[in-house]
Length: 142
Image (cartoon, rainbow, N blue to C red):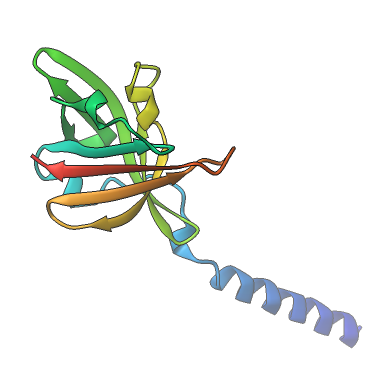
């Protein structure tokens, strides 16, 4: 009886230590609390998909990252709405973008790894899960 109590105690201690060691930063839920994107209007200064410069797709568009995960791209009277969120994934900070099936904008629908950021520029990278191609995206404050 004493041996079975010891085994149960050891298992309980092991499970407790495993649960306590879980990393809170591995949370994959979006966190829109990052203020940098919400401060001002942004433009795409670089979009390179699989080695091809496609920055001109977004020429003239201004991006407004709003509260509640809404992003609006505006060029004149044209407005394209999408969603955005910031999250941690395997220790990397990611920017999730989704503009649905809007032509050209659907190319931005990725979970972009934030490479560098400051108050006026954010450099992003996406590695394709299928073929390993790399895309780069840069937002700069307008």
